[in-house]
Image (tube, rainbow, N blue to C red; front, side):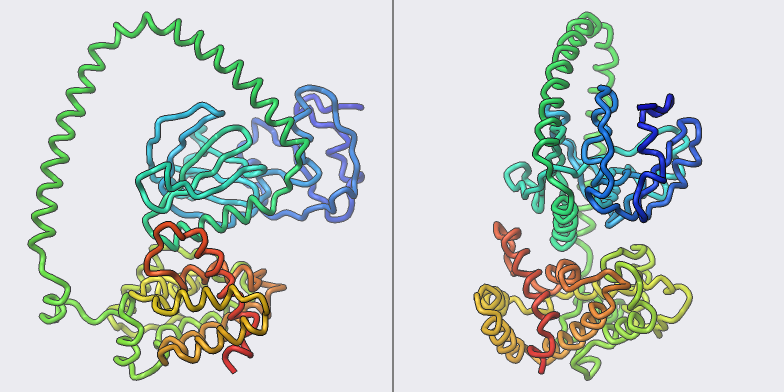
Length: 471
């Protein structure tokens, strides 16, 4: 079979006439064309698995290119599913354990991989001319699990790849880390798990690991003699770090004094320096202030989304610009007149992001803490009709602000589901988004992963059986 001289890709693979209608057309990337690499489309159309059978090259360099080739599209053509800041620590590289070092990373999740940037992706792309590429993690065959024992920090989970790389991801904010765990787990579950390709990759990993160990031992023997030459620079670094520690201690001491002397929130409110907030206020307090059972801001956001966001791809799943969301939050808290039709809020993801933030900031979630275990017991029931009746009974017992706000919110979300063919948001997708936001235990210690399953299931049932529950 004839081969291309530059890419080692069989000519038949590149021939569009051999592929079925709607097949992904792969483009040879010219190593000298930087602009082409950055301008490739992220959209993709998958072929039907098994529709086109192509011979696999036996050339050693081509062998890895054909693993899962008929199922997984090129990485450059994958859609971004989620992005944001998390704490990251790489604890193993190719099976070799590394010293744990936490850093803040901008993380971009697509349908097959995760990329770690030192700054936001937009800034990173503008700096690509330097030749620095983000660290990329292939999720095909990867494993994800909660890793409480791996760190003293809370909310830590671990990703282990087929190549032997291990990463810890963490956030102090419960709903953020839960959303990320769900998103990554769903991405991994969607990818094919081919046992034959898995075993081939493991064998290749063992060979690479043994050879890299030999190279490392050889490198260590060559560099041992060079250590005395660097003693002066090492002493300088130690002295420098000691002075830095002293400066940090002084700063910490001053900050502690400032924090202990600052006036309380109650004092500031009594003096009129801080007004009653919309975000972060208890739901019943806010409703009493507004003389309503549904907060005005919730109604405004829902009205804006139903007006111009029902058909938007990934509505409520895609994140809006955080700085703009915080600006909207500030305006709402200052009780300034809010017009969501203003051009500065034209991105509907900013509105949905602010609505989700409102519910996350409630001191007690929309499903009160005292009802959490009762909702969990109700969703565990085997018979679906019994489960619906149990949930309906609990909803009727809720305080009026919680019940009425819940009815308005889930009624709105049923309209999102009704347009799922356009916005691609099913009851399952919305359950993942809103489950941890609206429903959580007062004490999450040790049961986070278990609670996560029930949170999503309860939110899904509230959507699928909305008419029966709220009739």
